[in-house]
Image 1 (cartoon, rainbow over the protein chains, first blue to last red):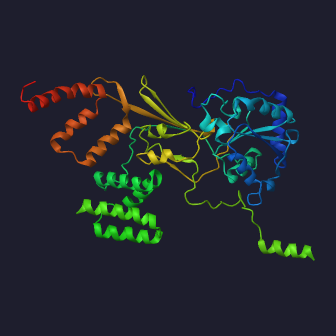
Image 2: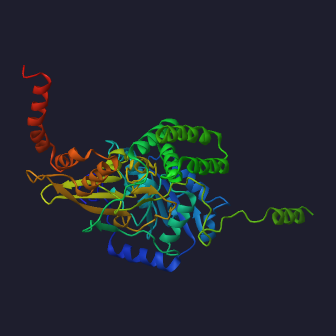
Image 3: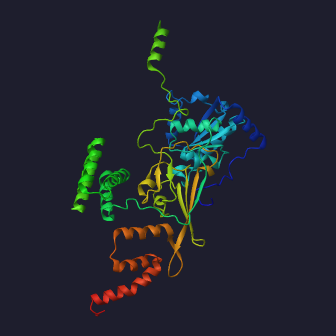
Length: 256
Length: 183
């Protein structure tokens, strides 16, 4: 993709030679466990670091797979790059790379490490570790949860299979999007959604409105209200009750 | 004896480790995982693209070929669910899949190509065909008066420029009537 949003400009990245690639293949195939990880923070917000440390606690326990975090790149098999790679962290990142013995696996960790994340178009960042280094594994997430971290390392070491695949959809001949609540009058739907979003905030408001509209559909107002009240009783949430009661008022005023 | 005490304590507390990946983990309600995209429901309106804070969502319009391409790069997504909250058709929502690790950036990409609709007057491409379909369906749902429905629909199938040109003489008539020919 040529556009600036999904930059594939890795012209400045280090290219490992063939012999190193071969060795790396042996590392990935032959060892599969007991790898030492060194973590390089290239200007991240520390969210990723917190999740990496959560991943090595007893709850998630990455050491089950022999993954151990070490404090020197000289001991490392795997280098984990977090952060959007700021200008001033480029040289330290490269030094860590050169300090690690071959063969080594480089992992881009988090949205920033994979592509620069929300900082991708800042003047002071390189926008992802793959702009300066040969990256073998991408672990997206902002930050990746400890479970995503464990999964990422397991995939990198060949213990699990990669789940993601490229998808390319082309619009079919007779492809139409469905209206969301075709049986609810448009005017009522718009008003319910607006009021719900006004009271509950955008994302929650939308969800509440859609649950409400799903419950009322086009049925008789008494029957619908009984259904909504049963739902509210099940939820037992005063804030939700307040909002849904207001939506009920709108529904009844439109149906009167 | 302290060793025995320790063993007793260990037996009492049990194993705290989540047995992931051998067991499916319990995720909290409202967990924001991978954005799941339904291209059938998408109308290529670009609301999500405008809302996306890190520009993980992207849209390109090719006016020559009459195609519009929607794309997401999961490597840049920050899982904020803004695309979900602005989507008018429910084509994108955050699921509970967090297993996104991948060896190449291509595998983190989803793309969808949509056709553009051309103006009934001048033939220029002006909006995605599916969004036009949807507007017409919504007009039907809203219930236009039957005498003006066909007229409205014909206007909507034109590009903004032609719509203005077609509408202007009628506006002129309305204004002249309102001012009783004094203009």
